[in-house]
Amino acid sequence: INGNFSVNFRFTVFPVNPTRKTCLQLPCYPDLQSIPHPLDLVVVVTPAKTVPGIIKQCAELRALSAIIISAGFKEIGPEGIQMEQDVLENAKVWKIDEKGRKVLEHQVRIIGPNCLGVMNPHHGLNATFASKM
Image (cartoon, rainbow, N blue to C red; front, side, top):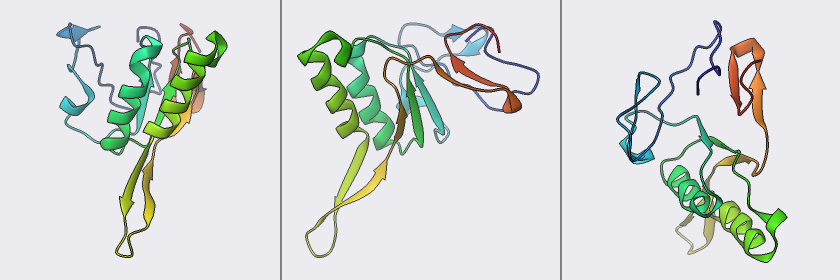
């Protein structure tokens, strides 16, 4: 997180870490469900095996988007390919309509996995693992 904020940064950041109380003087939340606000963007930098579950939480909370910086997916072979497919499926929330049809109710937009992230200097957003814009 450090170095990822600029003077133009106008967003609220909610670090999530189940074992820490603070992160760079910001309060840490133990999980996504504990964040008291809607989630526009979730940046995931955790071990690959945890990512499908995190994306499922994002979908359940109706997060709009997620950037998955974590590596260890299709580039490692069949197990990673399956994890990546699980991420894509877990990003969707389905409902059954009045006619009994399965209808997509919500889908988290995803960038990644195994990516640098996203920068938007105009808005002061550096959701990457690069230290400066």
